[in-house]
Length: 202
Ligand code: GTP
Ligand code: MG
Image 1 (spheres, protein in one colour):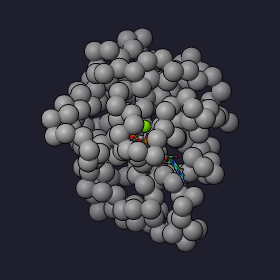
Image 2 (tube, protein in one colour):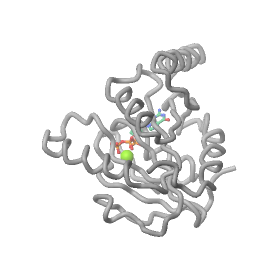
Image 3 (tube, protein in one colour):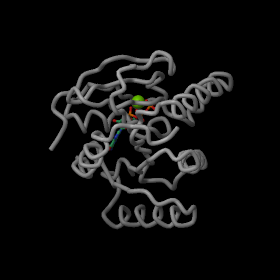
Image 4 (cartoon, protein in one colour):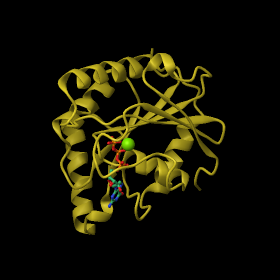
C-alpha cells in the first residue's frame, strides 16, 4: 500500500502560518541531508513532491503535504547544518520547538537517522527531547541501500542498544528511498497514526 493522493499545501515559516483545520499530522524530522524529503517522495510514489538536494539545508520551512485528504505529512527543516549562521540556527530552534510543543494534532514524529553513521549528539538530544515532552516518535534508519546486509543488521543492533541505554523504546525501521526497503512498514505505521485524533500531549 502507498499513499496515492498527495498534494503540496503550503510552506509555513512558523507555527502561526500552519493549517488550522485540525487534521492529524505526522512529521519528518532529522539532520540536514538525512533524507526526509526523499522519504516523503517514496511514501507517496512521487519523484518531486518534496524538493530534495545533495546539498544540506534544502528544506527551510515547515512544508505541509495533504495525504488522502485526511492527514498531513510535514517536512521539517533539518538540524545540524553547519553553513547556517548561529543566529538563524537559534531562530529555527525556537520555531521548531514552539511548533512541537503546540501542535496538539501531531500524532507521530518520524526521526530519521543515517544508517551509515551512529546517531549524532544532535540526534540523541532530539530523542531525549521528544521523549521528555511525551511526543510519540519512531526512528527511521535511512539510506540502508548503501550498507551490506551485515552492516544493516549492525546498524539496527547499535540503535537498539542506544535506545536501551537511553531507556527509550520506540519502533525502528530500516529504510531506503532508493530500493524502497522499509517503505511499506513505514506506510503502515503512518496509516495507524493518521487515524488518531491528536491531543496526545498538551
Ligand atoms: P534537508 O532538506 O537539507 O534537511 O535534507 P533532507 O533530509 O530533506 O534530505 P533529502 O531528501 O533532500 O536527501 C539528501 C540527499 O540524500 C539527496 O542527494 C538524496 O538523493 C539522498 N538520499 C535520500 N534518501 C536516500 C536513500 O535512501 N538512499 C540513497 N542512496 N540516497 C538517498
Ligand atoms: Mg528536505
